[in-house]
Length: 351
Figure 1 (cartoon, rainbow, N blue to C red):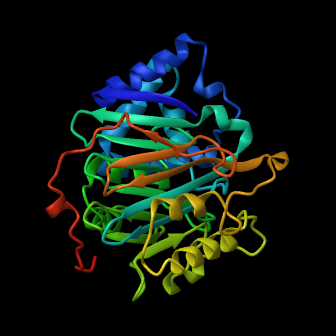
Figure 2: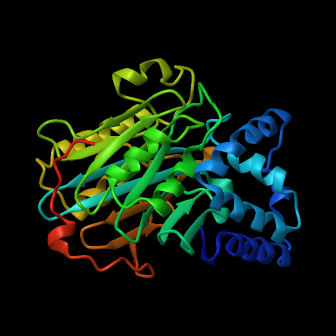
Figure 3: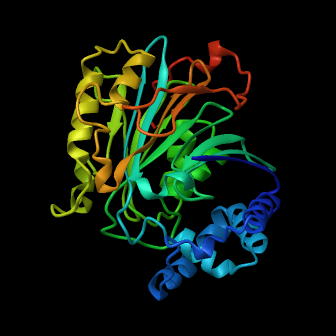
């Protein structure tokens, strides 16, 4: 995992990064993962009007990267805007919990070991948006992160049975981090915006509101903690009744999604709504059952693990598998100094 800072306008930030890569002999379009097909190009061009309406700034960033790379803007759009819509390639686990002392978000990112050195941790501070720190296996898009208001977001991908012109999973997370302050705002956006792919978005804010949003181009279902529980969990398949028609095919290899979900759920349930940071670390590192115990010889592993301690405004990350490496605090990100009395009062209003 390498670390990048993005500043100034979206275009300037993109141009600076694209140019820096080019000057070091790194060209995005020459990477073997950079796949362009006519089907994906047609789909991406259908998505462009949605981005122009809802998120034109991110197109400016992509244009900046293309100019900095001296490469095709159309090809870069094709690669980024069609991602998550045609292939099932990343597998992750998310949860969030709260009690009188904690508001915590945790996530494991499970992906291909061959690309480990390309994964990014990003610090964004761009004109016209909230600052945030995020992690991604690609670029521009985010897979998890936390912003200056303490809003933490993460995605888990679901097999793409359907797709339609809209924002894909990584762009949804990126938008929420850059534009939303609360779980309520994020949920409202996910109901409004056209969605391109199948995914689950886990959200936790500094007010103590936590939710899982199961969504695709046709359905958006907000799942709040069950009665008597103060946590939410998800992996790589839908669990709500409305999403049953869109669940994974039985023959799909989802890297033990059901088992990861069960392990995390049962571990959190056993806490009796009295949580700790150690509880989050133990779940993510596989001490309660299968979570990250992949055989690296197969080319799969947990490639990073992150805990956002929202109440304490702290970030902990493992750049690799948390069963073999320790969480380290990342002190580079600055949160807003907001009154804790107002910030951490639990809100019971339904989303």
